[in-house]
Image (cartoon, rainbow, N blue to C red; front, side, top):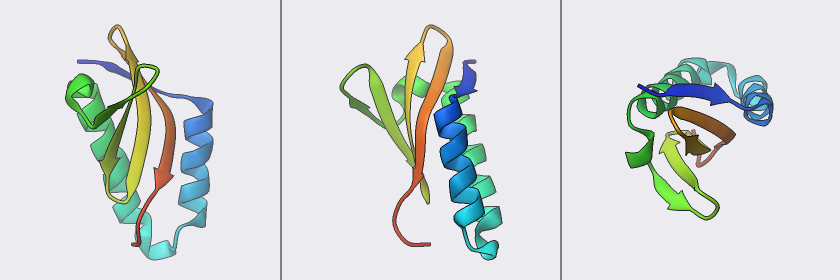
Length: 85
């Protein structure tokens, strides 16, 4: 099991997504964040696609996250909303 750390940047981005979302999207966003956390705590090196500078990108609709893994710690660096809800 990996330890998951959300950077302050990712936390701020998630707050902006949450407060900017329509009221009916709250359960969808809760589910997506829980899915990101569940998957990254279990097997982050096999999630998503690799990117330069030892980073990876994964999606859990309607969210996407950029993260990197150092040892047994996963750092969520950025999170954003994509597509239409």
